[in-house]
Length: 152
Image (cartoon, rainbow, N blue to C red):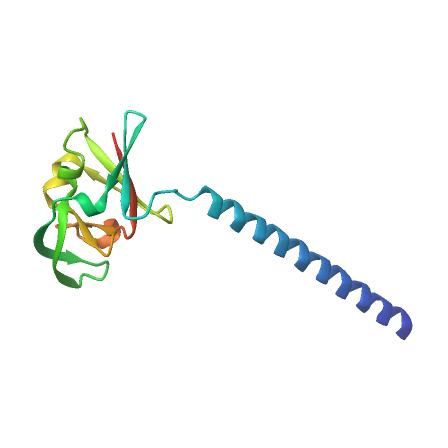
């Protein structure tokens, strides 16, 4: 009876090992697919999409201004910000829009409505853009590493 138990234990270990290997292969495939589907944007630039047309905006050529304001996180903690950047509305000024979806390089996105544009800034630092929307009661629209702005 003990021999059967040892054989069953060995089979159980083999099955467990096979399941782990299969899950590992599935995980690697999913990561490979995800990384391949991420936004491809040239370095130091943003892609603005409007009416199906994509325009590449060179971050280094944007006319920056100093801005400041206060943001609030999910716990209600306030943070004063003073930085260099450009209003989101200035980046999409040539477009007819009611809102803009701002997307990061890891596919995190936030929507800014037209009536909120005066409070929405792209902070530019070291060739990267970060969306900051002053007046939010939560900083969920604080999008780092912005690579795409879709105008609707």
